[in-house]
Length: 470
Image (cartoon, rainbow, N blue to C red; front, side, top):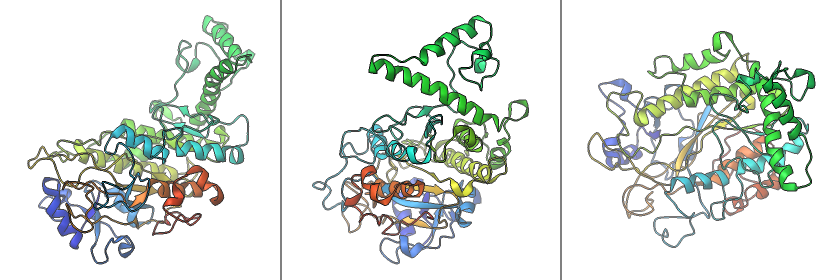
């Protein structure tokens, strides 16, 4: 995704990357890495004079344009850490997160930011529980946490006060048995708990009785809590449905479709794919934000398929392997950015930050020497941040030294595969976004209890990590 384009780092890249090397010059130019016009190479250089220029994947055409325009930045080599100072030399004795290189464990640790403790909540849930009363004070507002990709650890709040509303890329998840969008039970699906709105049908009577039960108070706290989950889902569903109505277009399309269709033009991929549809739903909910009643909102989406143990770079394909994933991510980010800048959403580009988080990157070296080569589980990895508040055209943190084995500055934890010891903790990366969203510096330690091990609070942007405008 983010690779050396020139300099000593490029020499090390070509020496270690093998069959997975992305060239800078090739007879077919569509296979070439794209050089970035980064403005802070010296700041992200790990040694001084090691980096020449940096580039991105050949399919990152839109990402390169947004980076060069200052709309997007990269964070280099972020990962789960319990303490700073892990090196190859002290790897066996240094405190480290448990279950490294395990997908499920590393996903949870990324989303909790507390890898050395049993999971209890996600940092998105802790941020929401702290900010929701101050920024979303209405008792009738939607949940501050909305997931377009199912249940996740990131949005779990400590006391359960901000239960995430769960959707899919297909839109709302309705109670079943009442027709599409409750058409068999109510006259207006946007009105909730209105006696005159229920139809004189079996489904109408049944929904009315069910919703009356939802509003009852029970003597048992467990019954109340159980009832509250269903009631909250029904209330949020109505608000979310109203929010989505603002971007309903003709013939089953939405008024934001064109942004994504244009972004995918010439890519060989359809804009009607699960990940693009997740991001389109987020843009639609932002467009209809007045119905949600919040001034702060956190959305969760997911783009899978990066476990590329084989055929990472399939020959001649724009849609398969890592190439297809980069192609889809590139086009989706462009469509989302253009939608946020559009009149239909209200030009909220400066008020939305989009960031990526991945359980881990892949080994630097390939696992084969032929075209079926892929790469295996590693540790740290690069991330993307995008938005009007982002100080773009920069790579933050420190780009790793691409040296393998038992040598000075090696990225290898063990062996010679290139396991990417992280140089920036998830805590610091996440804390900067939490501050931007409204978390006070004095309460950062409550959200990220391990943060003070890495930076002096509240100076969380030390070490070339000031990537967001105030």
